[in-house]
Image (cartoon, rainbow, N blue to C red):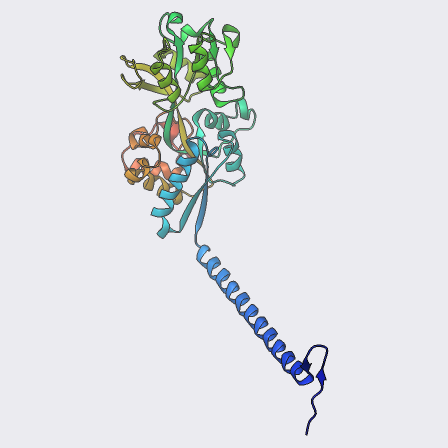
Length: 368
């Protein structure tokens, strides 16, 4: 008869310890087996995902900070493209950035394949002037105008003489925050009408501060480029500030574009703003969807086609997206088109200026 030893300290038998050891060993083996099975499953899932993504084309569209119009526009378009091109294995995402100048850098590094750019910055980069002096980026290509930044040069009534940009001379005028896109574009426009910072008493205020300073009598006017209607300008009219938006003549527009070919005629229709009874002949600078010549023709063709053939969805992205129409696609575009966009616009019968024909197409034509 086998005797059992009893551990009085822990109240267990040696036989009990042996059984527990066996159970622990079995439990460890089960855990190891489960761990191995999970690892194998994860590897299979990763390989499957990799195989599924092997044929996918991932594209990123560079926008700007999340608080403006660029970001929601870019993300919204990315969603439209991804939904409609799912079967084509194309997936697009929007990414935030510091804006147009950084977007050029992201395109050059291929960290973005698409970007929304201010027309002025696109022209500077393509030609290698001002911000991009001696560093032209001639691989840059246009796809389409998205929406316009409309120039609102506002001035107090008692400073108005002929109602055009000429009236800015000698006034206390805000040209926008320092180092901003507003400041840069305003200085070029002033240069086009033979004015500089020395010809005015410049201030460097944001939109709301500009209107407040005009209301308080501390400022005569300012530059407020924005989509129509611009909230700061609505506030100016609605709060009774005795001021108006200046007109831009055809001759002034021509001289401005001789410096930087980025603006086009834009009419602000009556009643766009409170107390505005007459049409205003101003100018606008487009925000443009851009890419590079490195992206293949087929992909850009599909993106362009989806954007223009699903207008209802596109126009729901943002109020400014309603401007995305074939009739507006080339207004103010100065950088040549991408081959894919060029092909689509030709198919729908759009009149394409020679200056926007892709250079590589011209080169091919010269060689044949």
